[in-house]
Image 1 (cartoon, rainbow, N blue to C red):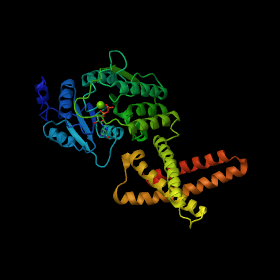
Image 2: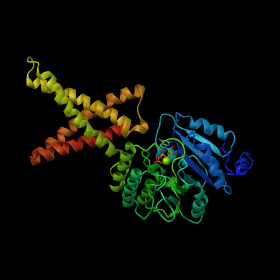
Image 3: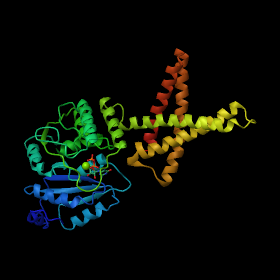
Length: 390
Ligand SMILES: Nc1nc2c(ncn2[C@@H]2O[C@H](COP(=O)(O)OP(=O)(O)O)[C@@H](O)[C@H]2O)c(=O)[nH]1
Ligand SMILES: [Mg+2]
């Protein structure tokens, strides 16, 4: 392990008897490919939390770099470390939820593995919670806090925009609602845990808004810190995570009526329409040279092909993006695809019956067509959510 000064404090934790008392604070560390950071993080936490009975719970999504193996080796040495290893699953929010749900400690904190968060403020955060705050947020955007060193210019402006959007749904002033660094009373978390969205990156804002909606607004305190550059490894932020955040935001803005994954499902549907039209055009052009076929036959053949291609496209895109946290594989993938075709067929019937019903009443092609399309999207979303990606 790296030599970083207070080795004696780290060493004292080698004795399980010394740490035999139940933890007051559980530090949850979601990790994906953080092999180069996790030991140093532990050592820094051990120094910061010298006076506290604490434990570190790493929730690792079976990282290919072997993070879990490193953590398990650490558990053989330090009594207050353990690893929850998840297979076939990915996702920061659900990793945090599962980590927080796995401890008996009355207080839980979430911190990134990459050393971007300043662990030295944890005792201050715990103090504020002990003094009555339900939730204490490490903030980059208030007091002495800063993010300039830890974020690129693009990430910083993106983060500012996301922060403003989050403030719209938070229900109370909070300077860094996008923070991934916070400490919460476990019972507060448990109150809302079943209602938290498991996809996406931003568990904190979800925790705040869900508590608010449950009629239990949280008493929030903040502790400023300086956001550091990532130590080792790479960021897992990607465009999908941005879209997932927009989905969560739209869902919260709609008062929870729109589920977070609906936005993504809808966007996939829009790309499906483009694929459908492109296939229709290509097949029509391809068969056009065949003089033996009537134009009606060509259209029907092209339309059937385009529908099958678009449905297949939608299925795979949803499986990899919208439901990346519950991706179907192997036999389940085949069964899921066949079920998806069947559900879309029913959705098509719903579409046509609603559209023609409205057309009879109003005789407005656009409105009737749109109503039919909305109807079948909602139908397809609800039914595939219940049966395909349950
Ligand atoms: N378990 C788990 N952890 C993740 C996942 N994605 C990111 N993390 C962890 O979440 C923390 C923040 O991720 P990071 O890539 O640093 O995001 P950034 O700081 O916004 O660039 C790090 O500790 C990551 O290892 C995931 O899919 N599963
Ligand atoms: Mg990071």
